[in-house]
Image 1 (cartoon, one colour):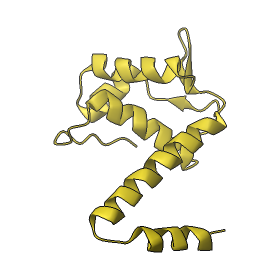
Image 2: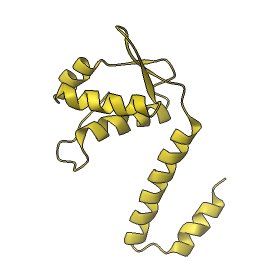
Image 3: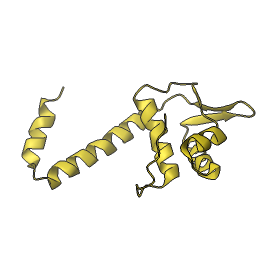
Image 4: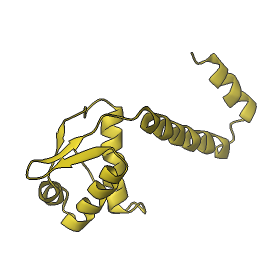
Length: 116
């Protein structure tokens, strides 16, 4: 379910945070689905439990998950803006990559206009 790239400059807690959002966006995690415990995910990924806990704290603080004492952590009702922000971040990255590879802005705009 989770893979951590130790060579990536992105902090590990942020990779976990983004991965859970990605799984929600892809429909692999749904509202009220339980996610692995901090200890379980730390063991499976080989990272420090404090790192996983930090990711979970950020997810909860942002309303992406909720915790029930003694039961675990679960996916909260998805906020539509979550998808918008993530999609636009991916879009921005793709556009920057295309521009850096020499693709003209006009061609990108034309391509966007064709999408429905």
